[in-house]
Image (cartoon, rainbow, N blue to C red; front, side, top):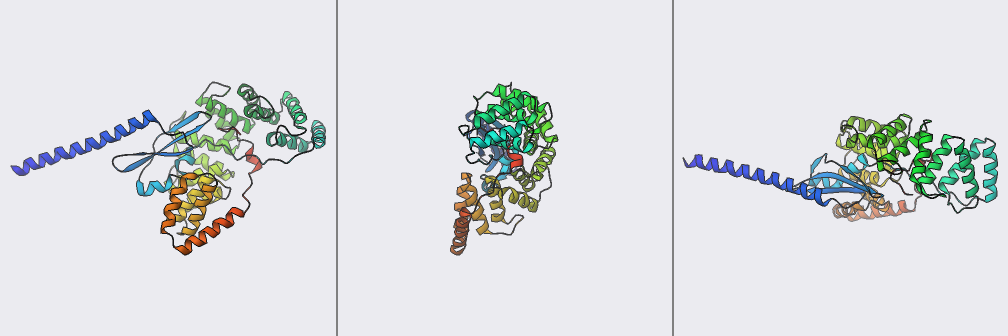
Length: 389
């Protein structure tokens, strides 16, 4: 009799605890949706009463935010080290490629000579003028002459000139910023199959700059650009598949396009693919592949990939357990702007021996004096997505 009553009370109590936990989760989610996250270019976490965290991303650039649904729940002990590294940020971040290398001062006479040769059809002179316009200070001598040549070339419907003129309008370099004119020039180049213009037109539709915001058209132009071999567009298309924007979430397709971007040498794509391998998103989990792609991106100076590589060294995943290397890569990631890894570096230093710390700090010091990798010119021009630079 008493045993039956006790069993009934225990069952009721268990159901009440489960219901309470579920309510706590619902309340936590509701409060988070109402309050939102700080607009940081990183990953935020929602702490649940059951002791887990769900990875969520909010990114902001130019007052534009993109929300990513929670996809993976991890225990604190595993998830916490991932907060400052590539994680879902890299798997879903719409990409902007590395800045173009800045050119030194070019004499006005040299620009006039290049302009004359470009007008005669010299492809080398045309390329030098286009790079000068994108990378040089608009106040540089000869910039107005180079811009005049570009406008004439664009009026002749040359797709590369239309693309760069669109870029100058989008970023206000030598011209008043005008997103509508940027979109017009990008469109005229994109209609001729110019991949970089297709990507950047997709970016304008993604943000609603100069054109009505339309994710379906963004998806359309990213798809065309990716099919035409743009590494940035491949990363962006993978992102939309990952997020399920204008399509159902398809992690296999996302990983496919991240791989295409990675194989074309884009650090962002390499880092995204590394995280897919680490977490088994769209591919079979493979720590050694995660380490391979993370290293390629890290060696290009990608901060989140540097932190991911550090995490793999710290936990011996796909790489030998190596606290010294982990410390060095965390330090490099922080120096390159991923400040979220400071806590990981501090925690790691507490479990390292004095000798390990001495060696690691010497390695960091040596790295800080070494020259950093240069941007890849072949992909750096397609850099407009969420970029004001």
